[in-house]
Image 1 (tube, one colour):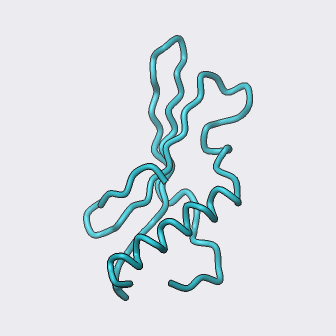
Image 2 (tube, rainbow, N blue to C red; image 1 turned 30 degrees about the horizontal axis):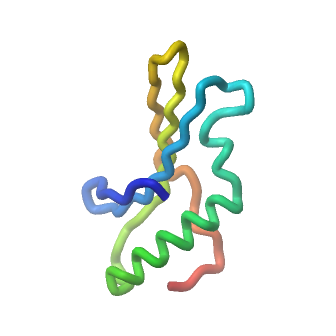
Length: 89
């Protein structure tokens, strides 16, 4: 997890992935199930630090950065994946 921020009333956990080409797939495709579990574990630890509020809204976003001829293109994938279930915090 690279960034923790807010989008209005939602806490957002963001993974940023970059690529110089799409030869090996999109940046988002590199966020595997295992990587999602690691990000989710970090998010749950963050929520624990906040005292595990019952009414907090949160989501997982991915920001893709693709450099083509050294020019970056950004793409934000909101709600890119859900928290794997079952989960507790």
